[in-house]
Length: 155
View 1: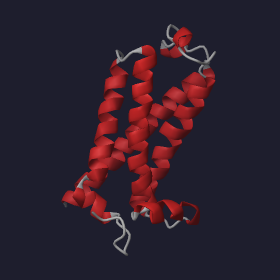
View 2: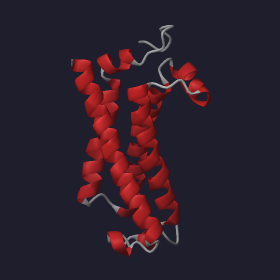
View 3: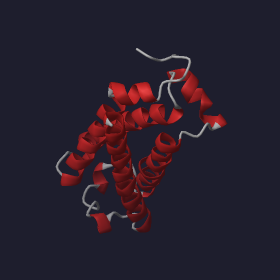
View 4: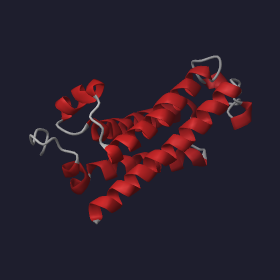
């Protein structure tokens, strides 16, 4: 019961991140100047001339990847191309990818805070969600549930 509740919370957190990533990514690609998101004022502070690259990043890494990871956590497909992640971590690739995504999100927000400041409410919501993803993935009941049958990677 506890594992199911923790896994459900983790999947919801990933899908929440995906919604924000898809929305932000699409808006940045639709309006590369950032006006539709109110981000045009910070564009001069960034090392890019428009929001196309950040939009592609949000769309793929923070939008599509969490959907694939949520699916992987629930369905546990054995995808050959992802086997290297499982061998490396000793856990199912979806668990490893989820933890990595939570850490990438933390780095993304840290860089964002350094470049443009950390003042928008969505940044705090996203930081809380990223923390939830990492904490939920690291819960022993979740981690054990995704450990490889050989026991590799268990601590």
